[in-house]
Length: 152
Image 1 (cartoon, one colour):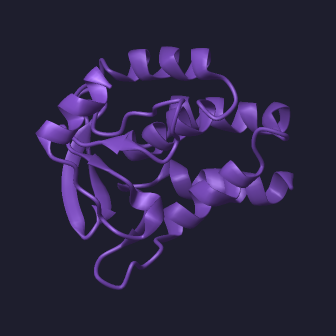
Image 2: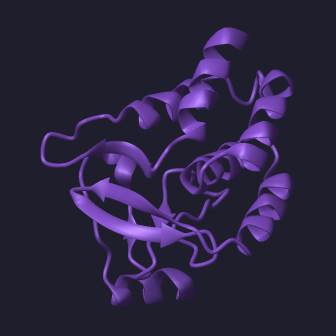
């Protein structure tokens, strides 16, 4: 497993795009998405073996790679993930995000990719819309729906 995890982390380290599901009309799975899924599949059971790779990715990865690392960290250590996101929030670098057919630009400080421990599949864009990329469809909730959820 270690060799495949190391290869996946190397792919994530040079990522320019953050996409957790298929992109575009054909829902094409990008190599970085496959790499993310390979590392995610080892968690949380393989956390102790994967943790050094994630730490390396947080220190040496591209801005998108660091976003993947912090998101992966949240699958087994939410406190460390919050600390990682807090540390990354001081970086001004941008990266491209995909939510189905929607391409956007994000940064760590803008919260373009924000992990929510209660629902790992739920991501928030900079516009505040919630999308569920893991379904293969793009579902945009309105601000009114978000308000109901907060009051709910």
